[in-house]
Length: 415
Image (cartoon, rainbow, N blue to C red; front, top):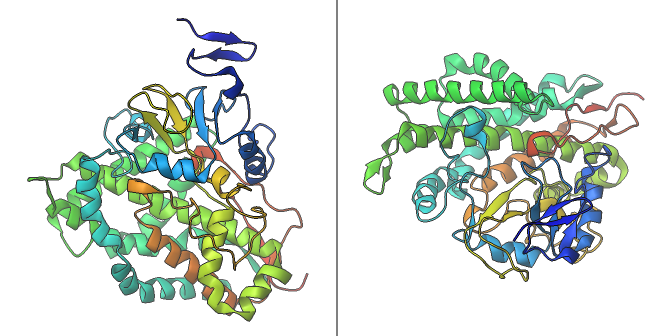
């Protein structure tokens, strides 16, 4: 049977017409606030088929906006497959997986079990003094000024220290890596596809050389752990270790930096309310980090491929259908959270989707929460009431699937 032709596109024949939407989910065409757009989009139904989001690789994707349905689906990784869904390696003309997020069971479980040891709560407790010292050191560099550009001064360099420590980067390469890494992360967010491809290729080659170095110079770090791991009776291949390292680079640096930028944008826009509440009760910093992650979910391009026909989400889906799970839509749903666009540090938000669900729940969530919490604690302890240096808030970028701000000028001196 041929596809059904509508005035706005060709729809696969198994898709009910009443479930079809032609919507710009995050308002990318209008350039508005993507989170405001997300809050409006999730009113279009718990599950719908969208043909209007050109940011996706192909037009036509199921969109899930309901928290309970998202959790149900993501507990079935064999049905909702992650394999080959990021396209990162194909962007550089290669074919390997980002591990573990592009793996399905049972292979996913083998790697997840090994990597979990490096990100356990106990391991994070050991890292806490090191992470806190990094935050203090950075803040002290500009504490005496009247303000700073937050992204360059803090958001990028802060998570870098933990990343370098975890991967065992040699200290004599520290300064070289810092300058190189900053440029490559910026390029990954470029509107220019060729620049993004070049940045991705440079990251891959850097990590490939680093793995060779770690095979000769082993230590107490994540890469050495992977090199020596037993993966179902064999050692991890270079491609498998590369997939782990590249993912750690993107997730450990890019997503935390993006969250920091959005979190402090919000705090700078609300000095008399949010800042003041946290200054009066510093013990709320951890709750604030989680609530801000709910309000500003930075990863919204997670696609799954259906491996068999299924109606588990209440609609008839066919094998090969693509299903999008945008966490911002769920986290800003009025069905899941009362007044979801409002930041409330006392909110019960333990079920929010910021770290995803199921087998692919964020491996580094304990580290990310620790970093975001420490950033709030140490910043508010050392910097007086701060505000946006420009009364117009910086626009939120959605390039490459990671939402954030490119620049954030804040001030705490005299207006």
